[in-house]
Image (tube, rainbow, N blue to C red):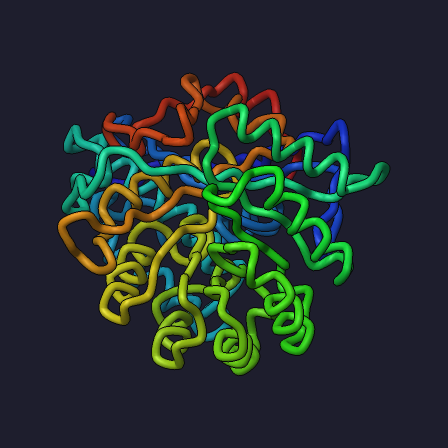
Amino acid sequence: MRIAELRTHVLEAPLEQPFSWSVDRTTVRASCIVEIVTDTGLVGWGECFGPARVNAAMVNAFRRHLIDADALATEVIWQNLYNRFRDQGQKGIAVTALSGVDIALWDIKGKAFGVPVHRLMGGPMRSRVQAYATGTYRLDEGDPLDYIVREIRERLAEGFEAVKLKIGVDFEEDIALIKAVRREIGPERQLMLDANHAYDALDAIALARRVADQNIDWFEEPVVPEDLASYREVKASQPIPVAGGECDYTRWGFINIFTSRAMDIVQPDTCAAGGLSECKKIADMATAFGIRYIPHVWGTGIGMAAALQLLGAIPHTPARLRPREPLLEFDRSEHPFRKAVLVEPIEQHGGFVDIPTGPGLGIEVDRDAIKRFTVEA
């Protein structure tokens, strides 16, 4: 089975209500979707995390190395593309583009053998995962102590027992918001913090100490991703578990995190860190180092399906009679085509999401929706 066609689809849609986080603001949602067609007619779908048009250009740079390649040789293709571009492509766009290609090839492989990806990777380790709600972005108008608490209330009504709160905007406001959300959700539900690397080590440590009594499950990206020394300082100087890694790439990027014990929880994005092939390796490495693995997810239903297939196969850390299970990040912020790209969208029920059991990624892509949201690359 050979690769006959490689297509990229740049999807974009304006937001009804633009939103901000600690370091940026957006008025649109966008994504680069990868489509690979084989000479047998099988089609695989993938997604790249990050700037959609730039990802599409990078995927197209892979074209001459992909056409007529063995579509089932996922590891051969991954190594070939990475090695050809590694001198300038060890991180960033080259790897995010490779991620989308790799996911599409695994989708083809699962369809070729008639099984979901997690079966090919040795699963299922589990049939469903608990989801935590992501959102709580800053709006252009209103009091965040009002509209974010209302948003959290909506997530609880939907059945979520775990929520993540965006912070990193203003030190004292962040503390007040954390305490307000904890009051709203009660003492038992899970609460995570995400600063999107907006603090330095001093502020991150000070904030964590101020809210240490709020039963926080993890403090995500407290400092910039390049500064592992500050990660280690934050981790050693306050009691909240430290998470990060959504801006890191490949096993070589994560080995420094693991060996330096910079994080308690790593969060590679399957659509960015190297795709399913590489993220399974990173997850296995995390197990060897006794570090928890909870993937970052922030794209369309295609990217979420890829994360779910990986979650169906990654090992427990550690294995025991009643092991701690990984979580699924479930974005609830505005996204006009997150669900639309799938014929049957991925939903949560009572705070849990079933891992798709159909062939490949276990999803059917809606081509009409792809066409409707596609813009010029």
